[in-house]
Length: 369
Image (cartoon, rainbow, N blue to C red; front, side):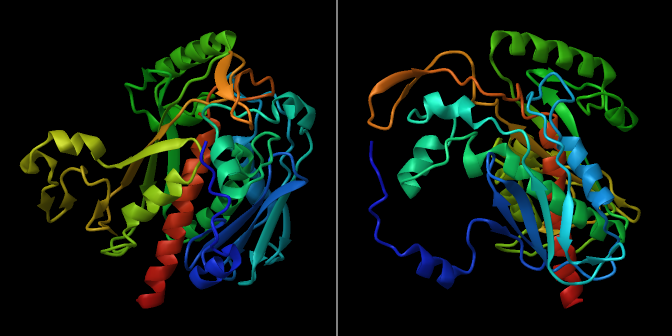
C-alpha cells in the first residue's frame, strides 16, 4: 500500500498561496463548514450574505428537519434533534451583512460502535485514502467525511434560499429513482405527500417495499435525485472556468455520496443528433429544454434541470473483505447505525448546494451589472 504522507509540500504555505482550503466553497457567497460526525458540533460560517434578508432559527430549522434521520425506512436509527443555533450575523430577524455562523450540537453519537473496526479500512469509504493523505483519521462514523457534514450545507442552503426568494427563484429536489424503481409520473404536487419525496405515488410505494427488502438483507441501495430551479434569470454564470453548470457539478459532486451529475438531457445528448438535441427558439422562448436551462455556461432563463447519481451507503452489516492498517487481510462488518440509502435525506442537501451556487452567481452578476 503506497503512502503519500511523506510528501514534503508545506500545507500551510500551499493554502496561503491558493487561499482556497478544501472546507470553503463559493466566491461572493462563501461558506466554510466545520465539525465531525462524532465531534461536539457541526456548523457553517457564511460570508457575503447581503443585509436585510429575513433569517431566523425557525427558517433554518425547517430545512434541517428535511434531512433529519428517523423519518423513513431508509434512514439511520441515530436520533439527533439537529437544533439550529444562529450565533452571529442576524439582528431582529434580519441579516446584518456581517458573517453568519450557524451551529448544531451532536447529541446521539455512539463512538463505541466503531472501536472494533478502528484499524480496519471500510470498503467504499474514504478511510484508506484519508489515512494515506493525512496519516491520521477519525474512524468514528467517518469523522469529517461523514454525511453528518452535510447538515452545515443545508443550514447554508436555508440562507441561500432566502436570498433567491427575493428574486422569485425556487428550488426543488425529488426522488426520480431508488433501488431500480423509477418514477413514471411527474406530479410535483405529490412530492411532499410521501416519505421519499417522489413525484409518483405508486413508485413511492414500490420504493418503500424495495428499501424494506434491502434493509432486511443488511444491504444498501442508491438512486437518482432530480433538482429543478424555476425563476432563474438569464445571464447567471460565466463562459469559461466558472460556467454555471461547472459550478453546479462541482458543488453537487462535493457531496460524499454523489458519483455523477448531468444537466438537461445529460448523457442522453450523446445519443442524439444536433437537430434533436438543440432547443428551438421562438419569440415566446425555448420550445424544449434539452440544455437544462444553461447555454454556454450561462443561464438562459429556462427551468434549470439537474440530476445526480447517488451511490449506495457503503457501511453494511454483511461481511466484506478488507485489510487492516498493516495491510493484513481481514473481514469487516459495520455494526453502527446507518442509512439504507442516502435518499431521501440527501434530497435537501442537493437542493441546498444548488441554492448556494445560484446565490453565489446571482450576487456575482449583481456586482457587475
